[in-house]
Amino acid sequence: MSSRRTHTKSRTGCINCKRRKVKCDEARPACFHCKRHGVPCSLSSSNAIESPIDPGHSIHSAHLPNLTPSTPGSIDSPTDPNLFVNLGHPSPSDQMAPFPPQELWTRDCELMHHYCTVTSRTLSVREDMIHVWNVAIPRLGYQSPFVMHGILALAAAHKAYLIPASRRIYLPLADYHQTLGSEGYRHQLQTFDLSNWMPVFGFASVVVLHMLTLPTRMENHALEAPLTNLLELANLLRGIKTTLQPIIPRVVRTEFAPVVYGVWLFESDEKSAP
Image (cartoon, rainbow, N blue to C red; front, side, top):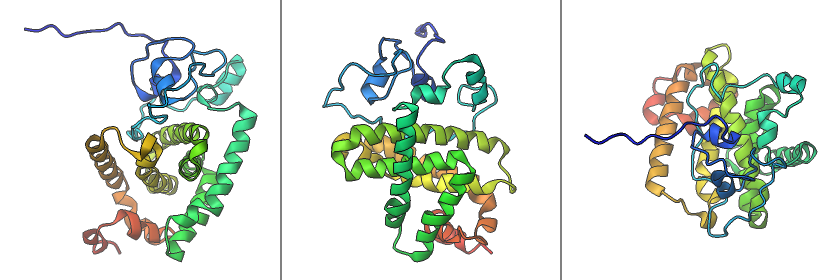
């Protein structure tokens, strides 16, 4: 009987590795995974990666967001930001941010402008669906930060595709906002019901589009493990649709109806919708 190989657990790994639930080698000034993905590592006091990224490596990780509902007390559960302010420490989101706060704010304004003027108008040729992407979804983002993170992640991925020379700027932004958006979505699922369905539906619709940009976010626009990634995508889509199914009859009576029929419902489902 073979013995199971074990390793010593560590609670001092970097924040990015904890969020991705991967083992951190705790190398300084930046761990292996952060250097490979080209994102700031919390193990560095300056939050900057000093080692250059190998041009042969992807500057974006070939993974899809974790949308499984979080549990209270988990490392992915949102934390009161005032706790970090009172303790005089940067919050986890600040530590994983790809830019200093002032520059991040400027970049976010740039991304929101790009989404409203460019990205949202490329998502459909139908005027009713363009209205949803251009007006209704941003309105949700103003009310729900995790939806706004999803919007900014999609805009960043789009800019990285349009401006290849600036991929090292926009892909880390896409990762950053997608991570925070996914965490907010997972937290919201803990209390998901008919009273708060709109933000969940809005983020789920945006995140599907972000998932589909994965090939364009990879170096040479090629997936590292195409079959695995496609299977993961199919499973995620199935899980999201299962989550949304109870609210579909309500959604189709709102301005989001075009997205329901254009993205979420198969032909057999349309017959059951009122």
